[in-house]
Length: 261
Image (cartoon, rainbow, N blue to C red):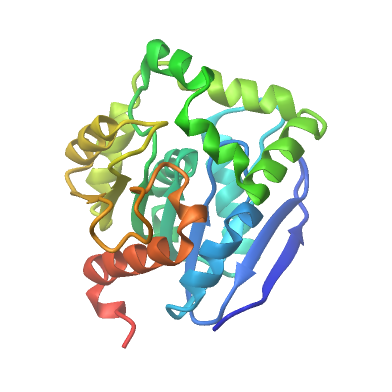
């Protein structure tokens, strides 16, 4: 079982990029959710590494001139910096949005794309307003590493502005054309969703999978999930082994020629 995670700090013209890497073997990239970092997914990194992957999880923060294109460029530079390209891209939450843009802009870097509980289509202002109100989705900030990462993002220079600009991006024009462009690349792809996601409803995943022209895998409480409570938006770090097993199975289906013995 892999137990070590290494952090690499890459030089960048805007700010250093930290990349957390675990395991040996085939490269795999995990893109984190809004305001978090690769380190917040420590359990998932280790569990994915046990499936024979060398997992790289870059910390992506654009503090000035925030645009989704720049976030994707940061991800591509991080992949190149730790020799993790090409690779399957796993994007959780906002990481899936960055992964979709990365797939379009750097198709040669992407072997497959799996979006996990990702707001790939517009959430709308009403849904965003509900997200700001207390609810079950606030459990996410109760997870130690995730809470620490979010606090660090908010307190670093330019952090609040970056978080605000990225949040405003969700209220912009519809993102449907991005998904049709991803589908047009022909890259193997899939959408993975927790049925009880209290942050981003399953309907978003259904629409995203339709636009991507790909399979949607829905995780219920009775299909291998540990514990009585069905997985929520935070399942990649609450249930990292189950998450890793599910992702590895999806990748085996998308890339049968690379299936781990």
